[in-house]
Image: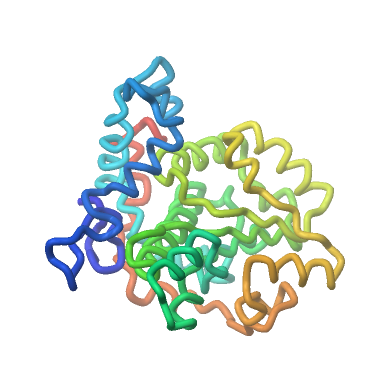
Length: 300
C-alpha cells in the first residue's frame, strides 16, 4: 500500500472529507501528490519526462514515476525501522521534532477560510528534521544508516500531513555539523544512493535545508555533494551564520524560539531518547534492512 501499516499516521494518498462526504479533501485522488511529481518533471505537456532521472534518462511516461515509488514503498517500507536503528541512533544523529512557522500560503489559506484559532494556524508549519552527522558513522553500516535517515524523513512527512489536514507534507532539515569529522562523512556512492531515493520518492517534500556550524571539511563535503542535487534543491540550502545573535535572528525567520533546540541557542530543552522515539514504530526484521537490494537493485 502507499501509506504502510498505520493508515492514520502515514497516509500519503487521497481520502474523503469526513465532515462533508461529497466534498474531496486536499488530498483527494492524490491530486497534491501527483502535483509534486509533475512539478519536478517541469509540468510536461505530453506527459513524458526524464524522471526518475536515472531510470528514465531517455524519457518515460509520467505515470512511471508514481508506479516506481509505489514499488519502492512496498518493498522498502520506509515507515518501519529495525530495532538496530535505536542503537545506531542512540545519540540522536537524526530525528524529527516540532515544526516551523506557517508559510505565506498557509497564512493566506487561513485568512481565506476565516480561521480564528491562532494555535491551529501556528501548528501548520513544515515538520523539522534534525541531522547531526557527528553522532553516527555511516561507514559502520551504510544500509542501516540510510534506512534510519529515510525513516526520519518519512515520519516527518506523515506528521506534516496530519497537522495540515493532508494539504502539506513537507519537512525542513537542520544539519548541525558541530564535531563532524571524516569518519562521520558518507562516501560519494552513499550520497548518490541516498539522493537518488530522495529525488525519486520524496519529490517536493523538502522545504529548506539549514546548514549550521560548518567547518572547512564540511564546506568541502557540501561542494562535493551539490552536483548530485537539482538546481531547485540547491536553492533551498541556506548557511546559518556562526555569530550567536545573527544565528538567533536567522532561525527566528523559520521557527519560534521555543522550537529551536538548546544546542543551537534556542529554548527547546528536549533530550533525545531512542527507546522512546521508536516506541510505537513498525518493526522491520533485521534481514529486511538490505532486502531491497535484491528486490529493487535499482537503488542498491
